Length: 383
Image 1 (cartoon, rainbow, N blue to C red):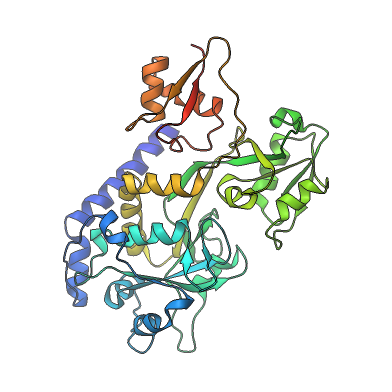
Image 2: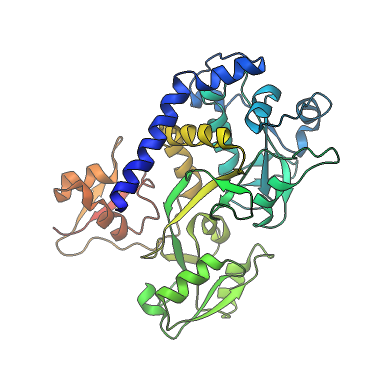
């Protein structure tokens, strides 16, 4: 049944991609008075896009000020105004943050530039401007902002991005795209030299988890019933390091993608980058009535995830040098990653079956099968 559902889902994305490239969006643009000019590649356009951070006030006023004309359809509003207004949580490194000058940075910022540089979003030959000046302080507040309106009853943002994992209609009236980041999981974080090496070592231990995250609480209570869990507030950016260093907890379980930035520069280590049984997929939120926008987002996401630019982004933001690794043992062999390698190809070559790439991923404590770099030394498990 799962295979059947997976096949149906894949066909839906293929139909959406076909619709985009058969001119579905250009017809909508023509009706709205826009052109259907095709742009260059995502890698070329991403470098030319404008991101509206606080340091870009003049450009921001031009894009979303007096000249901005609200539309009932969010997709038409994005196309006609040439700007997409994104709800974000600040800070939520490495997905989003700002420097001292108010300039936005992070995975979501670069991903949004690539996403809206897709030819399906072409508008008069100009790239859609990415406006991230719509910040909230809390994680649940990001999708909630989609429901906010101004004094004239117009919505204040178009989409929401912040590594969102909520199900559809949470909050009511908000739905989610296909994942734009997936195949990560919860990581096990320990102090360097800790005797805790895996989830099996957590029995009788005190383990920290993020306060107010029902998903991680459900996971840990199911997977590790013999551990004691303490919820820790993330209002202090150093909440993980301080919890472990003060011995308030023996270890911490946290989303790997967010943990990369949280423990960077500390003496903490990823004992396990992806705990068995965990799988996290991050999505983009839109209003439920914006089904046309959802279709085009899903098609563009599916295409972008197959590009080398996307792989470069994953590796730029989510590779960590703080994962615990061990050298090759008896029956194992060392392998140096070459240009063009994937774990699937390496598994096919060295283990005789590409499907065994998960064994290589687990043996090398890789958080995601895409997080390999040319020149990296891997250990190939024994046959």
